[in-house]
Structures are given as C-alpha cells and as structure tokens.
Length: 114
Figure 1 (tube, rainbow, N blue to C red):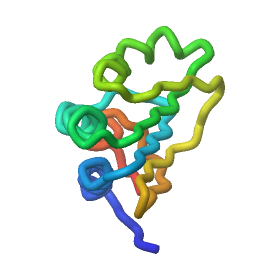
Figure 2: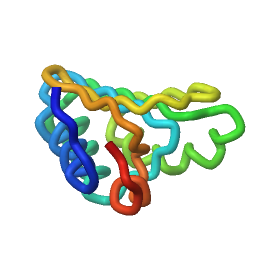
Figure 3: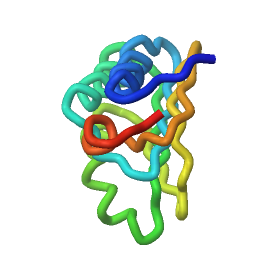
Figure 4: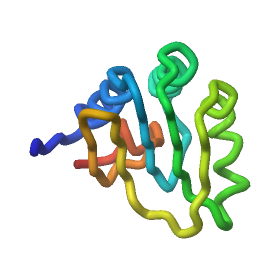
C-alpha cells in the first residue's frame, strides 16, 4: 500500500488508465475529466480495446453528468449511473486507487486529496 497526495494523485490516476490492458473501472460520483485524462480513457477503450466501465452518480445529478460522459461513451466505454454514489475507486487489472478525489479537474488540481 502507498499513500499518494496532491497533484501526484491525478498523475497516478492517468497512469492507471494509460497502463490498463484488459479492464478499467472508474467509480466517481462526479465526472468531468480534464483533457489528458479524457484522451487516455479514449485510447484505452478505442485503441487498446480495454473493457471500460464508468460508474457515475445518477439520480438528481444524472442530467448534469451525462454530457460529461459522451466522449467516453462514443469511444465504447460502458457508463452506468447510481443514485447517491459517494465512493471513488479507480482500478485496472493490476492496481487500484481508493481515494477521496472525484474525476474533476477542480478535484485533481485544486483540492487536497489523498
């Protein structure tokens, strides 16, 4: 186990996505990825054919969240919505990150996350 702090956490999430080979699961209540992360998700899905699932907060937040998932969905990612989702978990076939960080630019670069 390793503790990751600050902007290193955002880099670690992007690295987890970019090194995925078979499967990728991204669980985040709030999803509006920064451009580098969105590009890496697209590459995982469309280029490397990684089985990718996004689980995002639904319910009252679904209408606000859906447009942010369009890029990943067009690439072929499966998107699911869960009401009252609070968990943040990012994993591929070889590593996992359990964190307080949502997949938002403001969380990745403007908040103290661990």
